[in-house]
Every structure is written in C-alpha cells, then in structure tokens.
Image (tube, rainbow, N blue to C red):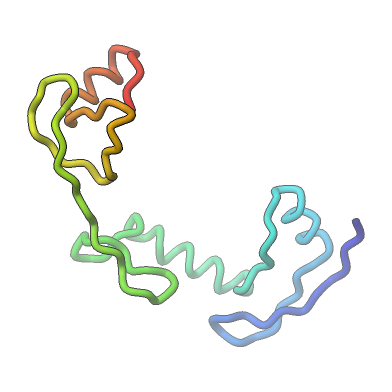
Length: 117
C-alpha cells in the first residue's frame, strides 16, 4: 500500500498540519484506522493536560468526558458473594453463569492463583 502526505485541519486550533506518508505507514502498522484529528502540538498539550492530574480533576472526581458528553453515572448491582455469602455490589449485571465474589474474596482468589472472574 502506498501512502502520500495529507493535509488535515486540527479540530482544536484550526491550523493545517501534514499527516506524512511515514506517519500513515506507522498508523497502518499499528492497526489504527482513524486519522489524527489534532495537530502534534495540540495532541501533546492534550496528553499533558490529562496526565498532569493522573486523568483526574482537582476535586479528584472522575475526569470529564473527552467528547463533551456528560459523564456516565456509575451503576452498582447488588449480588451475593459466591464464596462467603455476604451481600456485595458489582459494576456489572450478574448473569448467574459465573460466580461473583465480594472484594475481599476476589482478592483472596486472585492471590492464591485460583481463577476468579
């Protein structure tokens, strides 16, 4: 596959930047299918902003959505631990096809090398 330099407009600053043939080849080798939408300067600034607080806001709440959409509310489902029988909550819908463990039992299972889901 041959690649040719392509000019793209940055979605953040509006400046044009060149997506070089070499960069396109690199993207293709990594299996990336989307072209960059930000210039290298804006990409670097965005990464620095996200990494400066470990991806967290100053109040240590969840980081804001990058797409501008409202962040999703966390949902917890009540279930019973398959090991100790204690009621616990999990962030997924328990389907009943696999055992579900409370945090402490899950940690014990994982540290003992047994398979825990």
